[in-house]
Amino acid sequence: MEINHLLKKGVDMIKDREYGNPVLEATMVLEDLLNVDRIYIYTHGKEHVPENTVDKFLEAMEKRAKGYPIQYIIGNKEFMGLDFHVEEGVLIPRGDTEILVEYVLKYIDENYSNKPVNVLDLGVGSGAISLAIAYYNKRATVYGVDLHEIPLKVANINKKKFRLENVQFYQGNLFEGIKELGLEGEFNIIASNPPYISKEEIETLQVEVKNYEPIKALDGGEDGLDFYRKIIPESKGYLKNNGLLIFEIGYDQGEDVKCMMGNEGFKNIQILKDLQGLDRVVYGTME
Ligand SMILES: C[S@@+](CC[C@H](N)C(=O)[O-])C[C@H]1O[C@@H](n2cnc3c(N)ncnc32)[C@H](O)[C@@H]1O
Image (cartoon, rainbow, N blue to C red; front, side, top):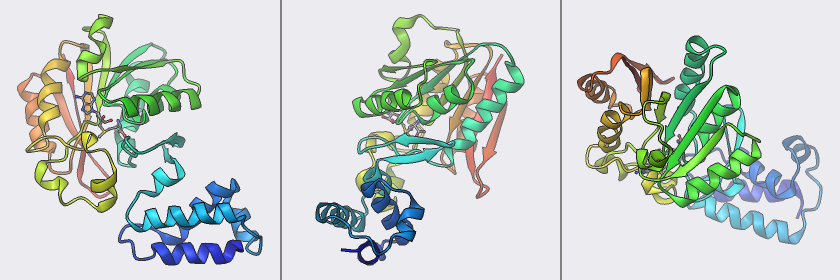
């Protein structure tokens, strides 16, 4: 079958998905399978696609038609200008998380120019936060923890892909993952994008997320705040004087998390909003 015909067939198969961009997605899958770029696809419409590639493409479109995320099909997602490998079992990095990473990078520049800085990332997933910080600031030494096997495997694949030496990943339940290292009081920055979706809200998520992304990366307990309740008090033992604690949060959790941090003695607590004007990040310092 010719590229043009195959693409059209693929687009027809996925055009009814509520969330998606059928032409772009079908093109991305074909690019990936043929190992060519987008311009090639658009300028070689008459080229014949081998039979086994046609089968793989149609199989992928069938999965996509059922809501299977495009990023798992093509095996990557761009985050902070870096191409992250992703696969089933790991959360697909979100554009909104760049707000946290950009703030941390700016904070390091402003507060630790020319100085080394220790960063802890709790719940690394694909390594999005840890690796973007380590990539864009080589003075940072980043420690990342995740409880689950697949995120740790994927984070290490990405670490290798970006050739980073200034980041290490550990397995464990939040701070337990680094307990053996004796790093109490050693972190300048603790960052986390923990699971924060409430029980009630999980049911309302789009199919792509609810049916295919790992529930362990999403489930923040009854009200979505379980991880903040655990991390905030414990972080105090791991932060240096003036250390920064920074979280990604759900759109309606800003005031709750701000209040929890205030109750634990954090100062200068601020909320950052996303492009839609919704609360997305909370940070504060421990003096
Ligand atoms: C919302 S995802 C964030 C992933 C990544 N940091 C990002 O921003 O794309 C939360 C991550 O926390 C991990 N996680 C869940 N419970 C954990 C725990 N008790 N200790 C450490 N990590 C945990 C999940 O496996 C998942 O990778």
